[in-house]
Amino acid sequence: MGTSHLIEKIIEYFRNKPDVYAEAFATHIMISAICVGIACAVGIPLGIACAKSRRVRLFVTGVFSTLRIVPSLAVLFICMPIFGIGLTPALIALSFLAIPPVLINTTQAFAAIPRPVIETAEAMGMTGGMALTRVKFPLAAPLILAGVKTATVEVIASATLAAYIGAGGLGNIIFTGLGLLRPDLLIIGGASVAALSVVADTLLSKLEKRLVRYRDPGMRPRPSGPGHGYGHGHGNTAKAAGTARAA
Amino acid sequence: MAEILRFEDVAKRFPGADYNAVDHVDLSVDDGEFVAILGTSGSGKTTLLKLVNRLYEPDSGRIYLRGEDISAQDPVQLRRGIGYVIQQIGLFPHMTVKSNIATVPRILKWDADRTDARVDELLRLVGLDPEEYRDRFPAQLSGGQQQRVGLARALAVDPVVMLLDEPFGAIDAINRSALQDELLAIHRESRKTYLFVTHDIAEAFKLGTRVLIMHDGKVVQYDTPDVIKSAPAGAFVEELIGSAV
Image 1: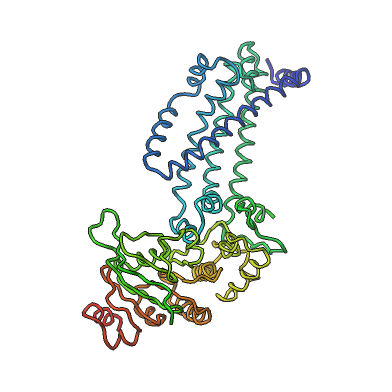
Image 2: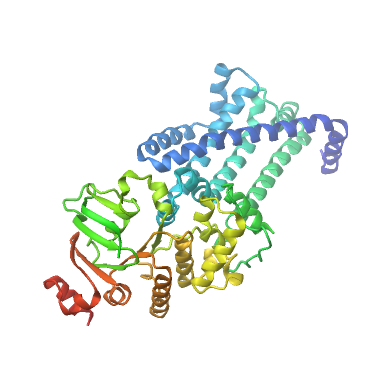
């Protein structure tokens, strides 16, 4: 089979089955987004707890470093008899895969906040909640985001396997290609997964850079207009700081 | 002058230690005084300071601020009325100079105009041009400028007491001297009470209306610089003064 023939087949696929492709692509993104969401919802609070208490840290990291050794494919298959086939076992298995990087980075991010900064926050009369939302979380955010990036890329790649247990996604195209010995489908599926990973990584890296702009001594200060400044009684300092710097 | 701060038989021992960091201290500070707390490292001077804003809790004894026992007060509320400056400065690196200084005003929900005006006023007070520095991040400031912002931040809501823990310890000699002069001027104008921890004898004698000398958790002498120089209380103080000449 020649290259030109292969390209023809690929074009033909997109012409005949754009809806099939679109659905697989959308499902893939949806599965990945949900799993990363779950990983953040579980990993970030747990990571904060780990940074606070040595005993929690030893227990949680022990559990997750053991779980991490188990290949995601194995987790998928173990989930099948328990949760059946389809979306649910795939989401559970992939979430387990995504939690450790978020959790570990959150723990490290909170542990790395300079002690004097935390002490002054406390000494200025911030409540625990204020210190968390106004100081600790914004300072931990870049490293947490790096963990989310790792989790996202891993999940996008592994979500391909979810097709094995009927969850759909780009893996469907790849496994169909394997079954029918059709290289055009393998290329379409594989390249799409790769492209998705690259795009996610690039976007999250950009966001990460933006979050640490304040560390750059050469940055030009932005002249302040009326009403500039953030968090006047709203406690939403991190977000507004981001927008202030983005301009 | 009226008494603003009183320690009554205050002792603090850290877990695992076999000595008291602060060893049964009695102390009275008058309103508007500038008390320089002088001591070697390990003398308990920083611990003494942190007992005032309840970053540490004493094991025994009582501390009264404006006649009220601080252990009966909500520590969060108490701290909002106490300025705190440390050697490591502790500026919030992700916030602009303005937001750093506005921290307590915003906690207290001042309106934006009042906060903005106060920030500019404080920046001028510590010798920084508001137009130039207001929107910078701490990483864009020198060490001396950062500590000026730290000072402005602590002064933001006119605290009853200012606690300063070796604030100029990491700043070069020329800037330190200028900052000391400015701090003296700010103190004179504000008439607030300052507690200033240092291990630098010249600094303590230059700044303090009274100097409190600590050794092994105890107050060895607490008097005006002139009296301490002319009548040092015991061998330790004599040696300390002698070492500075």
